[in-house]
Each structure stands twice: as C-alpha cells, then as structure tokens.
Image (cartoon, rainbow, N blue to C red):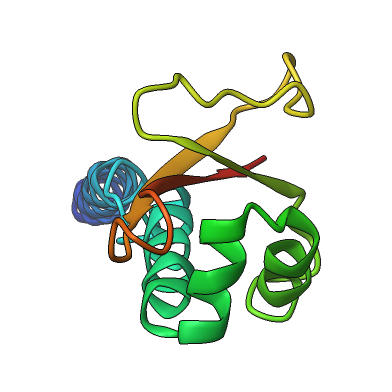
Length: 132
C-alpha cells in the first residue's frame, strides 16, 4: 500500500470515530430529558377535576353533605379511568379522614375538597379522594 492510501484510511476511521462520539453524546443527553410525561401530576389533575365537578353539581353535593359514599363512588366511577383503584371518604372538617381501604404497598394519591351548605341544612363536610 502506498502512504497516501494509509493516510486516507486513517482519516476515514477518525471521521467514523468522531461521528460515533457525537452520536453517543446526543443519545445520552436525549435519554436524560423528561418529555413532560408526569403521571403524578396527571393523576392529581384528574382528581381535582373530579372533585370540582362534584362541588358544582347540586345532587352530588347533597350526597356528600348527607354522607352517601355509595352514590359518590358511582358518580366517580364514570369520571375516572377504569384502571384506577380508588375510594372516597366523607368526614367532618376537624377529623383526620383516613381510609382503611388504601393499600400499604402502593403509591396512594390523595386530594380533598370541602363541601359546604347553609349551617341550618347541613354542616360542612370534607371529601377525600384516594387513588392508587
């Protein structure tokens, strides 16, 4: 082989190595980026939307104020994905309002809202929405 041929092959190999290094850096940078998919925030946003719907619907508000968990669960089942496991608790404002149905081995997302009425009709209640 001639000396020119060897130099040409070395330049080709150097160019290929440089391209591989640049591609490696680009792949590492892209793999560390967050593409905006935040499941936690999506779950909390859906929970807030459901509770907002309940707070604006007079029939559902009445179910909360009277402590009717079954009707609230039926209404929520139509509003959330079928893959969600959830429960709701209705309690007084000054109580802790925890649920015995939530699992200990999974991540549980909790959002709550206060539903009020005139004090002559019903006392205010806290509706806590658990999702896992």
